Length: 154
Image 1 (cartoon, helix red, strand yellow):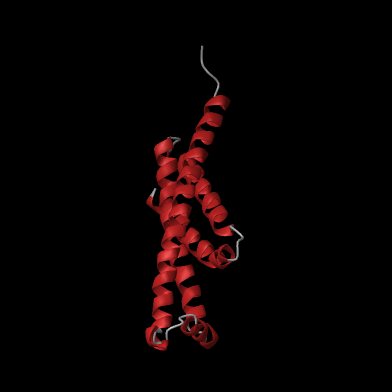
Image 2 (cartoon, helix red, strand yellow):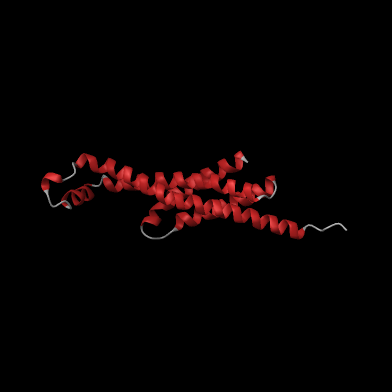
């Protein structure tokens, strides 16, 4: 189970981290990817270790933790890149009408990094829930289909 969880968590981490920028512009590819990977993890755990809903949900949750971390890292890196652009820094500084209350230029990048990590954590919680539920449903579906195809001895 540890091997399945680790493989799917690493896969979810990489894929979700790469798809988070699409989520920022309104295309929800990262949650869909987390759900698909969670379902695959639940199915894989069910086929390998026996079909129980707990195994499917736990495999989906482990993959979801990878998706959560990927969402945090992906959005934090994106926010850091955008926060260190001189045009964005000037826009942030000029958005404050009182010159004495403006944020120093050297604070904007780290603040964007922290904000991106926090936003990524919140988006990643959605990915974690979707991945866990998908793993649970995949295990239930595999178990239902497996029992239906097994002949009953009389």
